[in-house]
Length: 273
Image 1 (cartoon, rainbow, N blue to C red):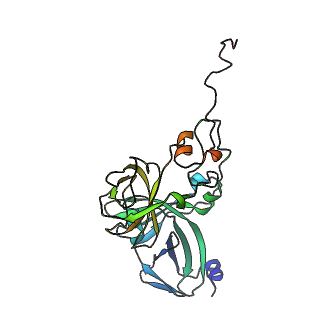
Image 2 (cartoon, rainbow, N blue to C red):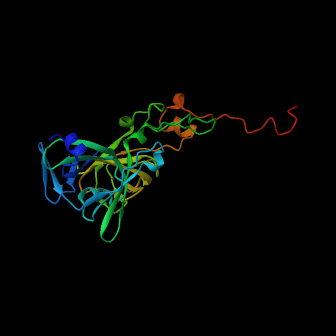
Image 3 (tube, one colour):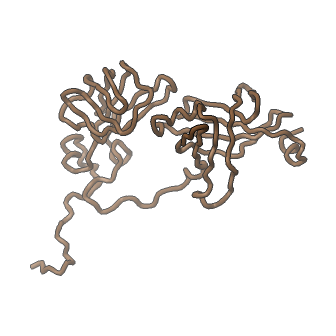
């Protein structure tokens, strides 16, 4: 009996399959069944996992989904130190024990994880929220609105990148004497990047401050998957001012702000002459 026939006749024994993927490099497979399930070449591990009801609505704010599972769920560990750098996508399949045909019933991504004493709650949003687009974002402002190293900024991140091994680190600091040098806070506002040896995903953390004399970086958020000797690449930051754009990056021709905006308001009632 096919999946659709079993659904219509109410003769099936449905179970659900949960497939998580982190940044395209790590995948996790779970099932709500009481035993492991193999579909094709994939084995779904039996876990105490369940979801809230799926609501089909035009209001994206109400289309979120909560998935509850046992506290030691491996995919939840990605969020232990904070939101991971890459996207954690989730696809929920439904199938019947009598056949191997599956149907996708929900797809989205995990935004955050909440831990309680006995379980974890994965807070997810549907994939169609990615279709939301921003309206006009540029303002008439002195500072540059462009994303550093972005398409409008046009600065090449590889040109200004520095790399070196980590000599020591704490929860949110690291020492990179071979890469971090120059004036203090040269890398503030930039980011550090390294490969997580456990997930093989690229981890990124924003840099709050840097000390040129010691090579110390202070990161925004806790680091994940860092170990002594791992090569970390760091990229300088920008304070969005025209002077930094000129002296630090030599990119004043692509500056997106209006630094020469007059400070005098011609409509404040003061005579011009």
